[in-house]
Image (cartoon, rainbow, N blue to C red):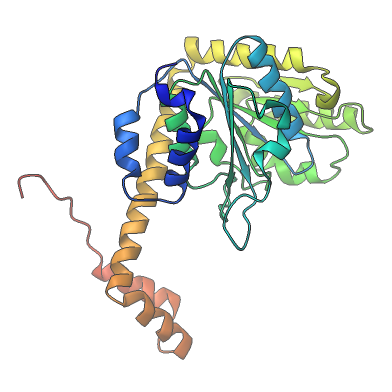
Length: 314
């Protein structure tokens, strides 16, 4: 481990809460702790609700622990409409690992994020990477086609599907199907498996010309530990490919992560400015009263908004 913090899960949990709640000083903490760790493997696990993502995550944790690897898990859950916190608790989901000193599991509320990830997920993963976890796993809420943020944060994305989706697979084709580095057909003992496999393979064959990495398709029954060995081999193959040929892929992920953070920061600062001057309140009241409309307000914003890069010598 590269930091004593990793040995103190209570302190780590407190710092993550500080990040989640955007408390003063959390970025200073991250600046002092941040350490790029190219050896850490980050796995994203996504897919529709009911696909068995948590059971699969549980099996993957066990496999890495058997290899002596330390594992950090961020499980992004639907948020409570009252508290904003995660509805599902990490000990309920993966109770077998609750007392394992080599496993740290944190549930985070999505807080309405349509991309499937909590707003603070990138910061939390950077923290966990910096303190030296060997493997990081991000399990997302499973909101469907809009769940594409995981592409920018994980080295390897597992898209978990189950037989019996029927026409739902058609809706997935246009969006979420494109993010998979590995297709996992879980609950492979259910009726409809062959149809699902045929549709996945059809999508792969139609898009092969676009792939730098051709995603394998792995059948599993996570609850019975079937197919997990082959899945682990596929993850290892992907990791080897990234080290040998995936430099541009990793570079693009770093750029996308920074762009997301920059856009969040710019949007936050602009909204603070507009609110402090009462402009948002004026515009919204004008829209309600019929004196203006959203498009006129945006036109006014374009005319009045000028962003100036402040130089150190000015």
